[in-house]
Image 1 (spheres, rainbow, N blue to C red):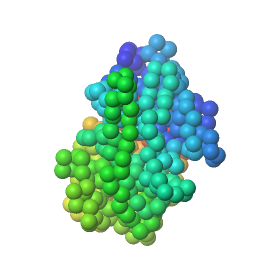
Image 2 (tube, rainbow, N blue to C red):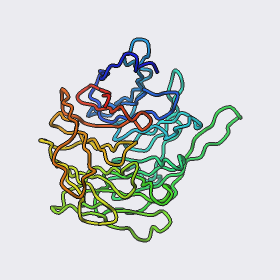
Image 3 (cartoon, rainbow, N blue to C red):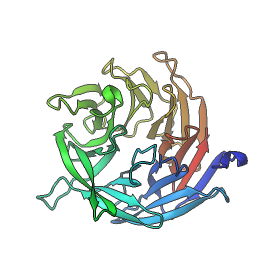
Length: 342
């Protein structure tokens, strides 16, 4: 894409509603494409697929589709080579997998783990395994995590129809589970961690589900909302507490003792994103309108200040660092998406 000729540092897109969920596409042929989820406090919500137009250097909405309830998270298939179908997954009341076409997006499968009941326990988050894109994990308010397997089958030789099944479901925490993330350790397929309302970070291995490891517990037992693994060094992860103004960096080799605390934000932190290309850079975003980039090389010495700060025009709900274009970070606030060159 010839964006570097124009050298704009910030591109902005305004959606017709408050933006909450957001994710960069990783396909090599869709570089500046993101999916956005609306946050409207009613049943009818939307997902938009937007892309940066090379000629006008403006964001264009390529596609909008309906989604029941706000998406708690959305993710493109982690397909850096463009060999799988162009799939997008969303979580809300259920996990849904969508196939993105040139003109329309259609639902491929709805994954429901609660077949025998009218009641559904909403999903707080999910993760898509990078090593095995047929594997997804969801976290739910019913204290469980579920690992799903996807299949693509030939139907009439014309389209791949995607379907899914439960590989395993486990009670992960004593209370609601708020986030789940696969680790790159040990081959990148079998290890994952979760955080929840009980204030703990727990680690699991799909090969040995009879036990889990508590990596960290919040000293005040505040709920932990997010966790994020370092993309280059699988020993490190970051987490944050509900209404907390700091991000805690953990080393799985030294359980229960944070190796760093990043606490320059002046309001509650909403998002964390590790650099895709560096083990020592992380971006945090908060209600204080700020996105901060930190260099944590000095650990375990205290990390006093971020190396970069960007102030947005509103409370930042989400931050995503583009895995295939490491010089771009996306943030969303109010009804706006911005991508920033770093």
